[in-house]
Image: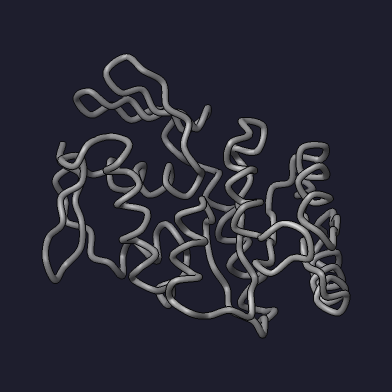
Length: 220
């Protein structure tokens, strides 16, 4: 299968670097230098992976991410922020907007290629449906039914919930979650916290329990 990658960055050198490396690995690569252009292109090509810079010349990358996450056609697209801004508040804003990961420049190419492969590999060999009490999670449609109502949520939130629901009442350590969901145990703990908070906002505070100093568990 030929995966599609959309690279959104106003720096030509970054676009060329990423294009060269991902094309060499067999990906079909598209590029954009501004937010509006990227948004229109994404709706046209429906990429598997979107690399999104935060500081763009027309529309802020955070806003573009929010716009993309409102489009059902892009529900299965992973959005990875690539930015020179490494402050905590910038990263939190990226995750809250629906980003699946936030990578601070300069880019380590081998790590980035591995990270993308880990994201895409998790689309295979999954149980079609998981049902726990009032929640039915459908891995094929990337949808969640709760109390008879269908919910479509960003891909990384979905994968986190699916991971926790796979073994209800088990306490998953933070390291396990980062490795199992993000494929990288070096990702900031704050990443998990932001995604858990968003799941609680959508499905209720009691759906995921915090085990202080250890991790999280799905209340099955």
